[in-house]
Length: 372
Image (cartoon, rainbow, N blue to C red; front, side):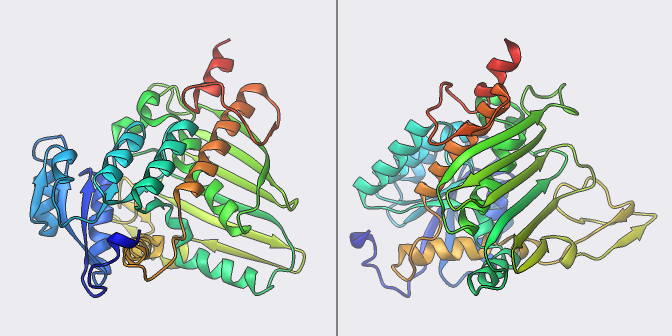
């Protein structure tokens, strides 16, 4: 990335965002929460009016209907992708060939060949491929990892990570052609990445998963409930629980077990105000549909998720101030484990790694067995 690190180190990285809905909004506000390293100067979205509304909300000066037109802007150095999963690979390749750094939302892509091409193209073009996994930057989880690295828990044998809510905001998540998988793909990618990262990027030896569609069969053929167990090379286990069936808003928690200690980190409840209201009020927490009755409003929500810190990190990597902590290679590990998880659910047994997929998208490893 040398030739793109020659700009003044004190100059802010100019950022373009592809997308204009929920995740794009989070990216935009996150850059503004930590504005010293980067600023968003453009939004691209193919839906007329969407980019304009987001740009107006955050005083972003330029809007585009076609992201490829945005890539022609010479001052933009880094582009974040918040588009449907099936578009990640082509967008990454186009961004890299335009000479700009890439931050790709999770999951990295739909297939392992796509992951390889994304990684190879960015390397050839000399640009960063950042994998937007915010759990690597979540303050509570970073603190847990710090304690583990200081020996606080002794030898760790189990890492559990759970993320649950009542389903995604955008309609494309429910469409398996666009998303590539259901709750395991959408939320399990977080848990798999977290376990891998927390355990020092140990190789994954095997994957076992149980999946089902229990609540949302009318909306999707994908899984809305998943449990996934990862076995790592150092004999530690990762247990990932993910659900699109939990009502009442987000649940995100990790548990770390070692022979000499344990820690629990509930992402929301330590920052929430247990609240009862007969009348309701504006906003409580992500995915909560109402504030009438009991709710758990949070404060500094994006900060607690770690997304502003994540975006600041990527901007500092672009300037050569930090070493990349969440890479395309990390995303590829997750995609392979997701394929193995869906294959495990389809076969009803543990899948040994490395795994060579037999389907064109992860969920098909399960669906083809389910339909046979």
